[in-house]
Structure formats: C-alpha cells, structure tokens
Amino acid sequence: MTTTTTPTPTTADGTTAGATTAGGTIAAARQTSEDLAQRARDAATSVASAAEAVTNRIPDAASEMDRVVRSSSDDTLRLASVATLGVAAGLLLGGTNRLVVLAALAPAAFMGLVLSSRRSV
Image (cartoon, rainbow, N blue to C red; front, side, top):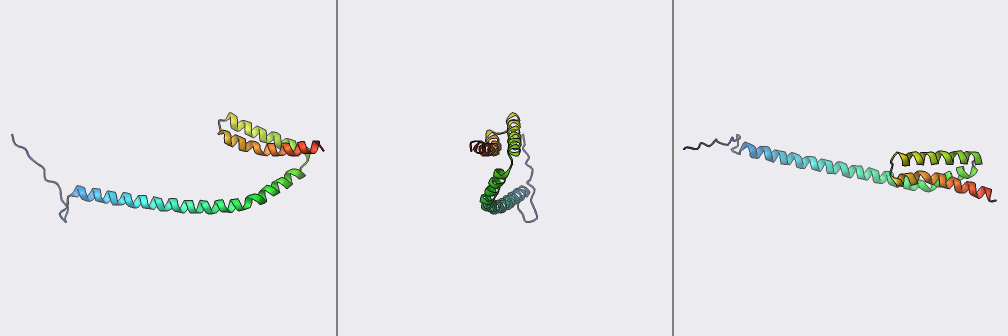
C-alpha cells in the first residue's frame, strides 16, 4: 500500500499560502478591533461632554418648571396630573420597567403636592 502526499501550495516568496492568508486575516481583525476601539473612545468622549452640558442645565430647568407649575391654575394642574397618571398607567400595562414608570409618576406627584398646598391655605 502506498501513500501519496499532496504538496502544500506556496507563494512567490516561498511561504505557504495558508499561513499568509491566516496572517492577513489576523492583521485585518486586529486593525478592525483597533478601529472599533477608537470609535468607542470617540463616542464615549462625545457622550461625556453632552452629559456635562445637560448636568449644567438641570438647576435652571428645575427652577423654571417649579415657577411654571406654581403659576398654573388648579384646573390645569388637575388635567396635567391626570394625563401624567394615564401615561404612567399605560407604561405599566405595556410592561415597561418599573423605574421608568416611577419616573413618569414624578411630575404627577409634584403637581399633586402643589395642589394640596394650595387647598390647605
């Protein structure tokens, strides 16, 4: 019984073709991962700068919201509270995360507190 072996194909520089392809694939994968890492760094930097800008605006927005709510009529506050409760109930029934539902209830709680403070005076 005789065994025959097939010669491994070689490239012009004498290396085997499979090794060159594998090395090229590894180099391409490394380059792609470096590109993705750079994009992730750029995205994180832009998100951080945007978050800083938003954080700086929060106190002004909160005081403006407080002013608008306190200057609104009772009927407007009742209507807005009911609408906010409806949105929160819809989110809850829709299966949204409970933290999101609680966040949706925050304006209704604030408006309810404003309404209750007006009636006790």
